[in-house]
Image 1: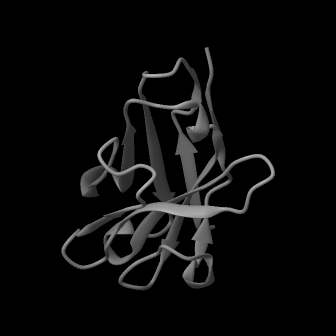
Image 2: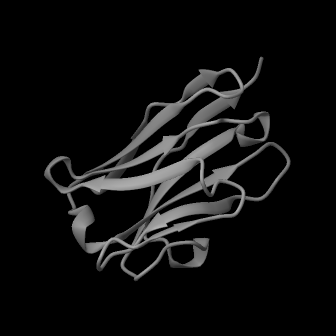
Image 3: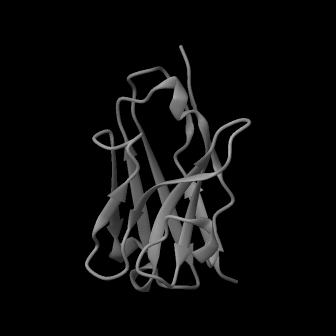
Length: 123
């Protein structure tokens, strides 16, 4: 059974950091574009970061650029999202997604979704 499993979420104060992991089971992340989406309460799910399937190029939405970093660890079949300088507006459920495409920034190309993990930024 193909699975993506997120870990590392939780609660943090503004200005803090969290590290989200997305680990694949029964398929190899190397051949997929891997993206992170998030859905805040009352808002639509949005793509915020992606690492491409070819040379590992990266994309960041303006809202997270300069604060979030995406990377991949082939040995662990895992993609990491390092989140720094967190703000209350980063509060959302975060999803990792995989696509047999060059990029995965929009939902329409997603082949596999993780179950989602809560990130809460609050003082």
